[in-house]
Length: 290
DNA sequence: CTTTTTCCCTGGACGC
DNA sequence: TGCGTCCAGGGAAAAA
Image (tube, rainbow, N blue to C red; front, side, top):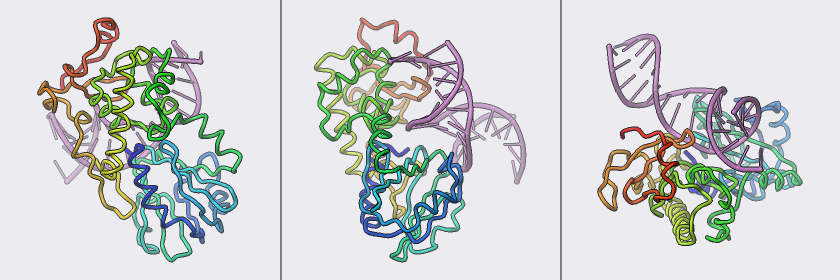
């Protein structure tokens, strides 16, 4: 599942390919990708554009063009970008769109589950679009105090608040579970009730797991791959995600698997204990044996 | 306003 | 071998 480290890895790999290139042809095979717009019209708008910069905001890839317009690519669950010589990726049944570049190569968009989206925005639309959906960049100027302000007054479970992209940009199920494990915070803690020390731990842990994720070029579980088809290696360093029933790397207690806000959540019931003051929250949780 | 629920989508794993 | 069922989950939209 592409989260901030995966999207940033894709950005870094694909930027040198796209920047300066002109789109000679654009084929949008899956109309769902650009819904509710007409794929033929979107493709026609893109042809002839020259890429000036490939950026990222949260989990959005931002392909900027000379005209000032921008193509926002969201990979959602199983989306990926591949780069190869012309025509090499055309036969893949999961290729949903192809950008033909003027340097004799193609960038193909693959997406098995078709949740991904492409949005072509005018220059003036870009900031409003992103600001309405995405909070501060955790590897940017986010401080523990600012994180505290984002969580202030929120009664939702900490896990749910962190998955909300407006709280902090770019976290998904994997990196939230990892950050909560590192910060020793229970996923069902009320989001607005962390003290300063806990906020500092959480802030540090979020930055730690995201930085490490980028260093390891993301986590490859099934579909995620770099544009050259290679895999990330962060999955080898998971302490919580997907490890229900396995011993905690800190204390040996079996990790527990629960569902929070419809998302599978794995944590250490000993290291990440809920405080006495919030028993009602813990009791409401749906707990299943790992 | 906030929070929760439903829906979208495919393919791999699993039970029989 | 095949079929049915469950599960993975980001985020928009609807419901509460």
